[in-house]
Image (cartoon, rainbow, N blue to C red; front, side):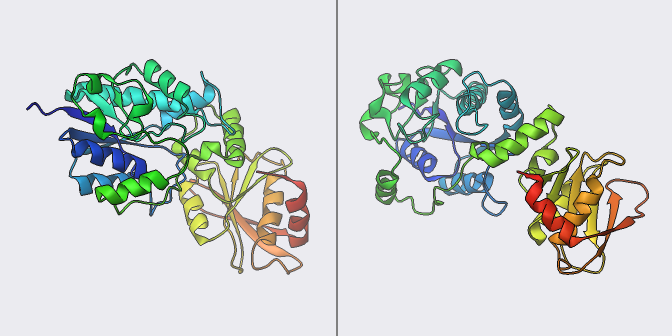
Length: 340
């Protein structure tokens, strides 16, 4: 009996794990691909990549991790199919990912694509009409097998040709995960993460931050995008971005993400945030406003005046300059400056 090979889209979540397990149980040879982006809501300790790696190791299948940040930024700048509630071009994003999966399919000699998609589970990209658009525009018409909801679609080519057994697949629909959890128990799939991941582009606040960054720089680096996830973001009177971290972890990450020309500042003699300023110009007042905010959010917030030191990130000379700031002014600015 011939053994067929497929490429499985593996996020590491419950749905994709079930799809992989169902295909392996039918004797299909699988290679998994996992897409990572700068917009995942995962934490460093529980990332999509780590969950996918864990799942691939559990199932004993090879995994290829692909970065899709550039494709998503292109879609954000020019969305052919529009946005969701934020800056999320979900259809364009899925089309680009399926295209890359299709290229991997052809490179490896695989015959089709396997996904954990569920009819109607996601409002923008998993509507039946949207799923058909994605399939058509990715060049994969008839080549996508959806084990969890196959019976809600016309049979794919692998189903028609008998490469996979359609009778062993499901007709799951909707946003409830109870059918998948029941199926997981039946198939012996137990160690899966809670369905709490997502994309920051769906978040309106993050989307507003990204719009501002793209207006300044249409081709931002990954570090610039990563910095958007952190801290309280104030827009100075002159339009500079002032980022105040909320804890030690954010402070460390912002310091690591600082780029030449950014300004780094902190209070002298008091614990508190290490503030990052992006886009400050000579004499535009951003440094003074950032200093007041730094004083307001540190341990010196009850002092009358606080000495604040600042320096340019990446400068050959690390000599810091200092100025006096008023926490009271910082309290006023926190309520009057635009905050994203």
